[in-house]
Image (cartoon, rainbow, N blue to C red; front, side):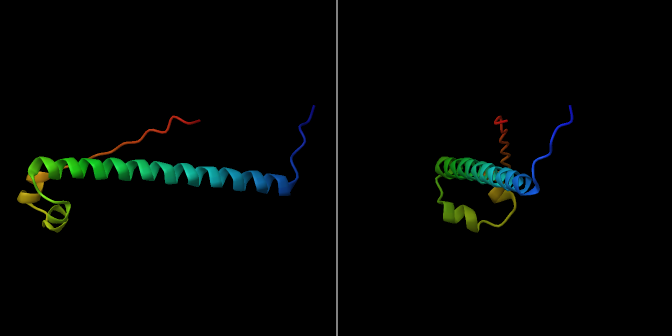
Length: 80
């Protein structure tokens, strides 16, 4: 039995829904990443006894590396 294709307007609507859901997930993922990064930086500053403003104004180099060397954040989306 040959499968009928959805009318183009229905197909277009489905594609738009998929794009909206994708952008919502991407936005949520970005919020998670930003929150994790902010928390890491806050904890680093608290441990070193400095303010976030001081950290933001530090030039890249040895001094800044002593406070925050490298932060990697990976978010795995298990929603499928």
